[in-house]
Length: 185
Image (cartoon, rainbow, N blue to C red; front, top):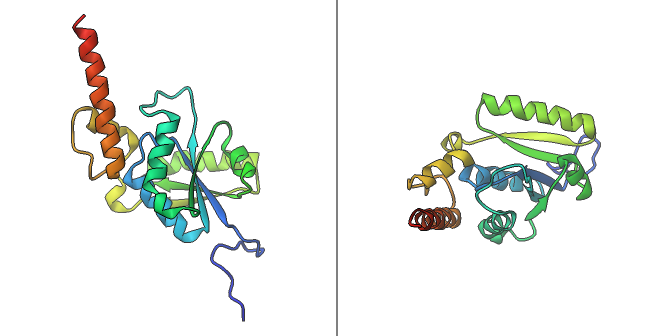
């Protein structure tokens, strides 16, 4: 007797690819956890790095993509990093997926994410949103908190992968250098 794959829908149609979207400015251990857990459920995870010119981002689009690719290089073929802009549901449809994965840290995340899932369902009824709860050790981590700690010279090694910690240190060192040069004029 054939067994049904875990990644099949009720109607038997396989769901091979899931999309985990975000700004990832920067990538945190919370993101890494959700991405790797998603890769255990789905055949492939597309990490969709949102281009949003209205956000004041620390890392460029290219830097964010490169950092995520570096972190997941051993997952070649299973985890792919792709930049996108515009509506998430249009991006999901363009890569022929039907699943959005979102991570939840707290009740406040659920309120926002549930609202977005309902809007996405209204725009594209065939796309489903799956919520994965953050592991307890990652529930306090956000990209905003990481940037604040790093900016003030704090240790973020327990919040971000080493490749990201190094990039943060370099970015803030460059910014300090720029600030000093402008102050000395």
